[in-house]
Length: 221
Image 1 (spheres, one colour):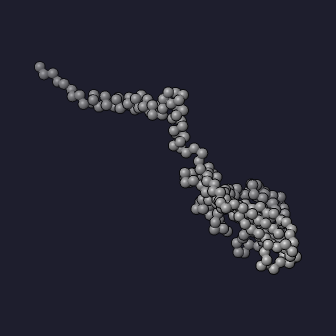
Image 2 (tube, one colour; image 1 turned 45 degrees about the horizontal axis):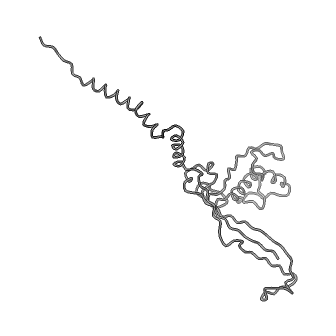
Image 3 (cartoon, one colour; image 1 turned 120 degrees about the vertical axis):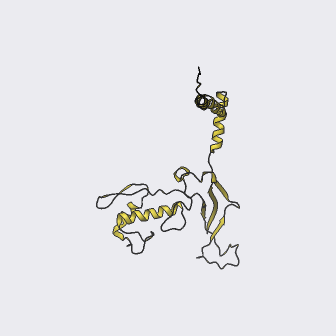
């Protein structure tokens, strides 16, 4: 008998980091990355498509288990070594059997911002179902195999990716540190800037306007 225990976890990203660049938040939304052979973006689908593209570019064919366009030849047994080398993700340069170097761009595959993760545990044990069976309605023989699949937990673990410190919280912490160590706040800094720079500029401009309005006087004899 084979027992399979499933655990379900969900992953989603907070809307607070949706405006961040994918490289910074380390994930893609569905509309940010389109795949050629798959309608839904996942890290696994991106890596499979990247391996297929690398194999086609280096070996001139695709393995039978890889996605490919119509008309692309299937690699034979003489291309097994080439398939193995080209399917390795993480290398920027692959060497073919002709010792030629081919530059391959990085796949840039990142996890999906929204994902459903399944984890499983398997337990295999033997049992004589013909003499000791809790399923009397099943017709079991010595050659029978039984697979039991069930969920390990009655709940789902939801994992949310959020920023450790949003910008407004960071700004508040900086202002608090200014007030604690310097005896002033960010507002005090802008007040000083206003009185010593902006206020001085406007005072000088107003004084120039006042001088230009003074009319010349004439002395009559």
